Image (cartoon, rainbow, N blue to C red):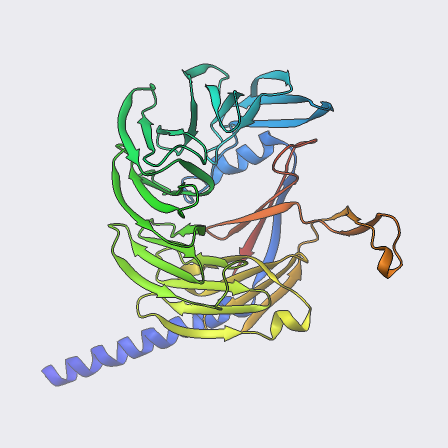
Length: 414
């Protein structure tokens, strides 16, 4: 009787696995890419975020935004707008100054206004919240790393033994960082539940350490490399942290222990990297090449160096969706490719993000005595992947002469 019972259990398990495989195959054979929204309206975008943030905590409403341009060089004009989570504009202000710089961090919930002094030195930083209220003013430069925490900035030349203040939301000093000059804001990631932030810290000519700071403002660990880190990624659940340094991508657990180290393409620059939601799968792309790994074993699951090459495409952004079952590849050409977990191409489409004019410098030796302008596909955009969504932000991210356009596509399975 017991043998019969065990046999039935085994048969049911096999049938369950088979049904799951059939269901997955069916879902992935009918993938669609559906545009949900394209708008310059912060209100429209924030209302979409409000509807979906409970399911996708990686989404961020735009609470502070700005446009800025040179009114008459060197005079710069910034218009800063403050919004509610529903996208209603609360207030706006205009700053016209030849020296003032502003920065809206990745949290989109405040603005830092810098009054510079001598080279690489900031005389004053003023922080305003999403209501336009001044919440902090300090007589030096600071960077916001999320979680209500600020870190002092001393620029690249801070002496042989630099030490930076760590401040809480009220400006109180709660700690220090040693052997770091500044926070590299282009190399910073915040866990979705805001339990930690990981970032590259500038260290002059001696490379950069990567540091994990907890929400209490404590340094949990750091890793220092001879080659300065190029980029960071973290999994949606925050359990895995990837650091691209030199030719390598090192994967750490949250406690700082090394899980894996990869050398995907033997290249220092130009890699795009992504984790699955739990970090158990890892995708890396370079030029027309894609590698997909099992992060639990380090095994290469598949690679593809032909599909993109046939279209003269190159990887710009990567995403891993559906618990590691799907790899999304976004190219400079705006082409989007969807591969399944075995490397089969399931969908190919173009997102048609528009065109812009580029200036080609003169080249008399090759018959171009003057600079020329040519029209090509726009490169002024970047992409984020949250849940089943691809979120495109289009426009010049630095000094903006017009509002950013936000475009949302959903990957629809089955």
